[in-house]
Image (tube, rainbow, N blue to C red):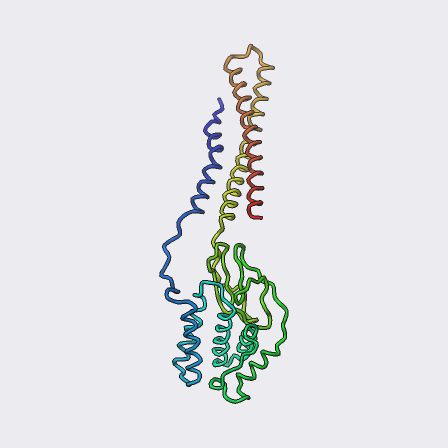
Length: 301
């Protein structure tokens, strides 16, 4: 006698088991996070460091300048909220001065070009750039006459939004610097940094955004659909086998030399019942698999 019952129950429980494992993996708790490197940092500390940069530059205090410049760069990723235009201009001024001291003249001009978008009438103080022929003055003048350039498309990971100098953007400028802030759909800051026209963006070190609720639901749908598709295939194979066994039994009953025994008749009926059950299971699993796949695609869309 054929014994398909354990095998059938295994197939029937497989989708639920796989879906449960997928759900557990998706919603597993993340490991405990390390100490926040941005604790106590933000725009206020960055602004103070930017002022210290100007003071140290005027007084030719190189150690103080380097320390403040380092702090400005370290504090930029720690500004959690979307920048205001004035805040962006403050950062651009600091980066222009920092690049100039490192003899990065293109970067200095790009930073001044970005700053002038907010402060078009900005003039360098005489204490910082004495005389009308100071190199900083020439770079600022070059920035005033810089062309607008051609915007470049940005491809960010799904579930993120890009802000450049405090404005939502889908493109990046090609003629000036920009302060990029990338946020997840739930409003968390994923990455922030200073981007020049020749910078790689998105940067290779940008973290992968956490999966959204939509992606998690879609993932469970696809995993369950895959399990149901496997169930449909398995029950289809089982149905084909039982149908063939039923045909063989029918031939034995029809062509048998003697009367058919009660056991043979019962086996024939059991084969019919099981094959019908497997047919219904295969059809139902296939329909559910298609439905879950469509549901997952709609959720992602």
